[in-house]
Image (cartoon, rainbow, N blue to C red; front, side, top):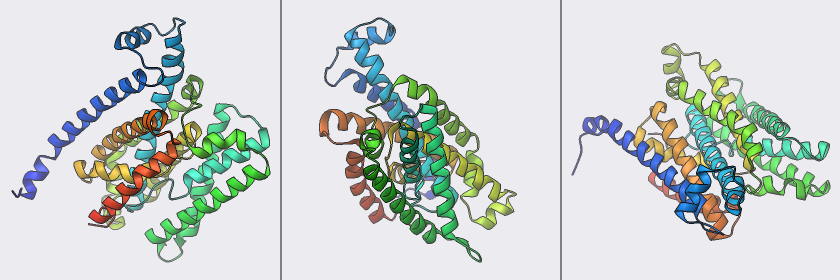
Length: 339
C-alpha cells in the first residue's frame, strides 16, 4: 500500500509524539530494571522503600542509592550528550557521518586528561572537566585547521579525513604517555570507557553542564535547522552562519568534554543514534534533538546494564560490537548519503 508523501508528512507530528512518549516510558522502565536487577537483585517493595527513604543506612541503600542510581543517571546523561552532540555535528557540518569521536574531539579530551594526571597525579572533578574541555577545544581547532582550504573553505571529505587522522594521532600519543609515565592505574577507566567509578559528587559537578548544554541546544534548535541547509540558503534567510557555527561548536565541546570526564572514551553513539531519530522527525532539529537525546540515553543505559550483568565486556567494547552491524545496515540503506 502506497502512502502519498503529503499524507506521510501530515502524520509526522503524530508519529513524533508517539515515539517521544514511548521513549520516555522506555527510559523509566529501563531505569527500574537497572536498579532492581543485578547482583544482588531486589524485590519491587525493597526498591520502592529504599527510594522513598534514601538516607536510611542499609545494605540495599548502599547499593541502590550510592552505586546503581548515580551510575544509571550518568548513563542517561552521557548517552543523551553524546547522541545530541552527534546530531549537532551532522547538522552543522552537513555531513551524515560527522561525530565528535570521529572528528577527534573525544580523543583530544582523553589526551588532556592523561596530561593532567601526568602533571598533578590526582585531580578534582572540576579539574577533570576543565582538562577535558581544553583538550576537546584544541583537538577541534586542529581538525578544522587541517580541513580548511583557503579557496574552498571546509570540505566534508577533508573534515572527516582530518578528524580520523587527528583522533588516531591523539589516541596513540595518549597510549604512549600512559605507558611511558606509568599512568595505567590512573587513566585505565577513562581509556576503557565505563561508568564504574561514577558517584554523586561527580554528577553534582558535571551533570549541570550536560543539562545546560542540552537545554541550550533545544532552545536554538530552529537555528540549527536553518544552519543545516545549504550555506547560501542559510545566509539568505538572514542567519549569521559563522557565529551560529561557533555557538553550536561550543556546545558540542561542552557536552563531549563532560561526557568524557564522566565515562571516558566512548565513540560512535553520536554517529548512529541521530539517523534513527531523523527517520521519525524529518529534518526539523526541534524534533530531532529531543528524540536523539532520549534514544541515546536509553541506548547507553541498556548497554551499561548488559555490559555489567550479561556480556562481561567493557562498555566501550560492547557498544562497538553493537554499533558496527548497525552502521553497516544503515550504510547499505544509504542513510549516509545525501538525499
